[in-house]
Length: 174
Image 1 (cartoon, rainbow, N blue to C red):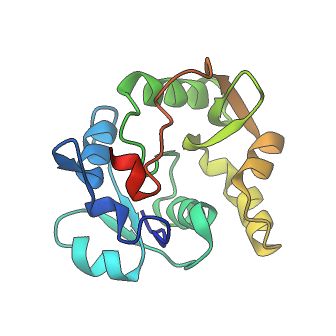
Image 2 (tube, rainbow, N blue to C red):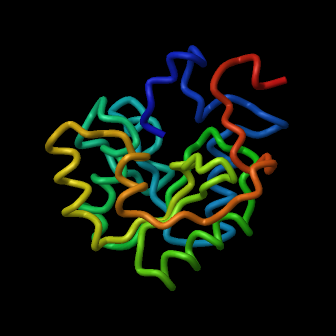
Image 3 (cartoon, one colour):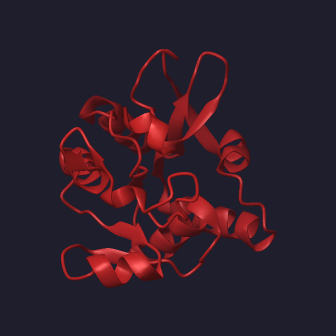
């Protein structure tokens, strides 16, 4: 979560898509794989959500997904399965494949399509990558793709899946 939602015009987590909010849908997808669920949220979201969900308040505001992932790794001190709230078509099989990849390879894992495009989210992050990720962060190198190409492991996707559809602006809701 935690994003600015500038293209959408309002917080994507609370946007309705096919009868439920993107947040409700994301939680259902994640709960199909794990019961240990935390939301990475910005200051405003924290106030709204902390009484209903396990929330990690962003300690690195305005630093994008890398800041949220780094905060979660540092706070929870465990491997992480991460997805964006705006991916309503991700499925259990796709998330489980990342966990399997991460546990078997010992590397941070994400999807790579047939054109070698690294899909940074969803991804499975290794706790052992925390120091490496922090060194990128400290140098203000916030591009997850750059980090993943060097330190991650790519799970091949067929490139035609709708799993990675992002709802980024109001026209995507139709």
